[in-house]
Image (cartoon, rainbow, N blue to C red; front, side, top):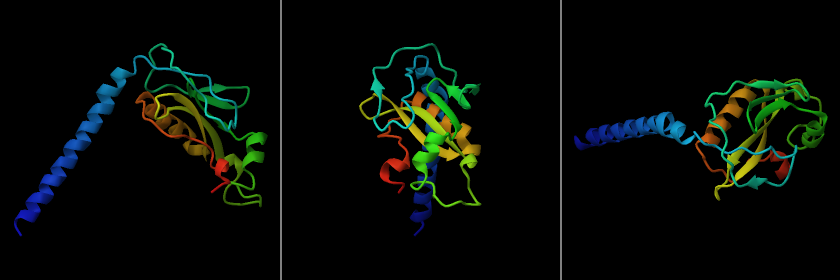
Length: 168
């Protein structure tokens, strides 16, 4: 019985070491690898196909970019290929009756949501454009999280609106 506490202590120490290694990796190795990143033009709004291309080297990317409002459609650009904006009429029509109820609601409105467009790597190493709809007050944070995942070249199968699956 005295061996059980020792095993638990060893497991906890191993988890702490693993956490330290993850923090070290994302604070030193990943920024060093990001001196050359790739960027593409975002896909057209609500595209059902995934766009990809061969990455092209660009200038050094700042890990914490400053959002830049774009006056034409209310878009706020966090980095090239990473932006969020209020829902326009086209998006509202697309999601209504699928992921957004067609009946009027008091607890959530279209104004509470933002459309987010991001770049990501797929499992073949290709750069793809993804899209999400998130709470408006989280749009900047979510866009930045996906930007960090992109800089780390974290692969994802796809990032598409839930409406592509009938809203479920």
